[in-house]
Amino acid sequence: MIAGVKRERDVDGDEEEEVRVKVGRGVEDRRSRHCPYLDTINRSVLDFDFEKLCSISLSHINVYACLICGKYFQGRGQKSHAYIHSVQFAHHVFLNLHTLKFYCLPDNYEIIDSSLEDITYVLKPTFTKQHIAGLDKHGKLYRAYDGTTYLPGIVGLNNIKANDYANVVLQALSNVPPLRNYFLEEENYRRIRRPPGDIMFLLVQRFGELMRKLWNPRNFKAHVSPHEMLQAVVLCSKKTFQITKQGDAVDFLSWFLNALHGALGGTKKKSSILTKVFQGSMRIFSKKLPHPDLPAEEKEALLLKDEYQEKMSESTFLYLTLDLPTAPLYKDEKEQLIIPQVPLFNILAKFNGNNEKEYKTYKENFLKRFQLTKLPPYLIFCIKRFTKNNFFVEKNPTIVNFPITNVDLREYLTEEAQVTEKITTYDLVANVVHDGKPTEGSYRIHVLHHGTGKWYELQDLQVIDILPQMITLSEAYIQIWKRQDKDDGAENHTGA
Image (tube, rainbow, N blue to C red; front, side, top):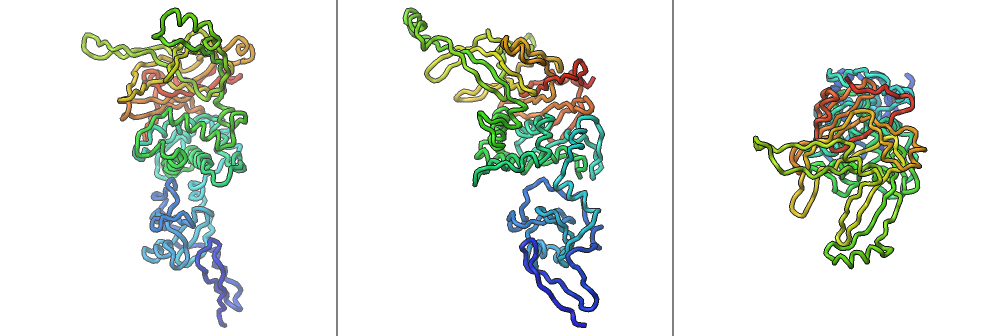
């Protein structure tokens, strides 16, 4: 019998492929069948953390991963890079990185096999509501394909060149449960509408993808590369933050929180998951000061004017900046600089409504005092370690002494807020540390694993467990505190 040939268009827009119909023997479906080359797949080389680009044409369109060598190639038609690669190197199994379908080349048929599900899950992990609800209830260790064991969420991030300042912020945020839970389910933000040509939503998509990789219980390796996330940061920040140049973690945190809030459709009046988790409010009392060089009589006359009277305003915040006392310059008898220490409650006194601080602008000076009016579920402290002037950046090495749990902020609230805010006690969940010199130092982070109550230190790819007593000895730079729930009571995880 004559074999008829039917030509049809490839679903991915590649070149047409032939589907042969054996007349008299029924139809042989070449679109899906078992593949004899599945045992050639090398899972140890598969890495889906990098940008989905063809390694030859550098195109984003229609990219396939070779599951034998891990490289990316465009297309699968007869003149495509993936097809040529399959013939040249006898690598036959490919995965479309967009549709998540598997193909055998050069025969060009779809492979349907349940043994490949682990690969699609690593490329695109998904989480059910039930899975998310149980994330903080146990401390089960998982074994990656490469044999290493890891705790989902306590996963190292690759320092590509000089991006540890961003890594610590991403790791801190990934361990804030309500924020993490929101981004683990893509459905929560999939339908948010953005204006045409808006690139900022890319931040939301990439952050969600990174969050799902960090919490994936079925990873092939026990670390993640934030490559695609950081490329979105470089693009959306217009190169303010880069992969190749050390940045400031507080500057990055401030930009990232506000950029994510805006990309999720949030405004000053409209909330987003960021404001629901981190936003508090304060009262600011501000008083303009006469120029210090003026004669005393003129100063007194000016202070009577309306312009120099104290004014009150309300303001929201996503984090609180805590000022360190000036570090002393004297040395001890061994000629070593004494590292000063300060209790956390001393630097929190800035918000007690009484302590005044002078702020200088280019033209004017102001005295300001602050008092909190609303506390968020998660409170971020940024400890101001760096002062910049025209010539260089100075770092204040003062160690802040703080308890890990039961920090009560009630005294920093206004009288009205003390009535409305029922729970004002917080426990530490993340602590970002800056080590070394101002411009060339390095970052590491301490995070609390909610399921085990244990603390871990993460520095790039290195993950070690740490005693909570050791955390307070570091030069803390950013801290995230969790408000105790009604059922927390005195039951706090200290890891001891």
